[in-house]
Length: 386
Image (tube, rainbow, N blue to C red; front, side):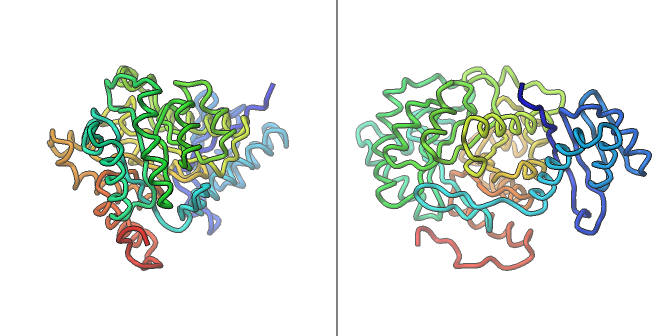
């Protein structure tokens, strides 16, 4: 049986470089209560609940406490996961390399423009999909996103709004393939937004270079093996159920812990299946089996996700929880709220922002990143494709 290694979530590690403590949450940790006692004896703070340990301690003292409880067999794996999580939290995301080029997520946030080639998406269904002018209308919309400053374009042919019905694979392929092919031929980095392995494979063969699967493989058991075989980056998103029924599953004891642990488990599963971790992006799935309070809690703790060591993507653009906060029932009247989420998320370490309103979002995240970094950005102001 494969070794079960603990999962480490970093809540705060600002003082670690000066030898100070980190605030950590560990799950799947053997003998957590005994380690908590040893941490307390070493003047740290630890609280255990089953295999979960919340601790405020200098990381080396936490490892020493684990060693006193279970020797090197317990301390060794714990040191590896804690050191990696703290380093990722402190150091930022790596770049994301795709077959069509690099997204510089290691140095700045990037914007993924949303191109819904659908008649029924929640905020813009039919805007880029005209059956009498397909794929022309969608291609023009995609080129406009690039001209507005999108670093990449996310093409989807099936709505994933709450309550949406599935679309047959052949119809989804008819919608997306000519659009993917045309945008890729223009040199764009294209993501395919799909839960179907068949669509993912065909889109990558047509020129897509990222697979964005909001189901994390739960709706098609072939998805993960397919992505491993395709050798492209994969967006691992937290969701429960399927779009048609997902809001029936919006119940959590601790939404941050449950989402984090599921994403960590997904990274493990994908890595074990043969997908290198450097090809994985994580997304907490705002709005996917989550209500407004869950979304806000995840945004408050979004920095924690950076301790997974992968670029973090946020897709909040025009979503209903923004309307709940602002009182706007019209999805197209949620620009200011969407920009506020994008800016605060980027300030917390998010590296990919999925957006409808690309030009405004690109400017907002540039400013937010400059404030967080405390310096002016390198390079020209993004005004579209260079």
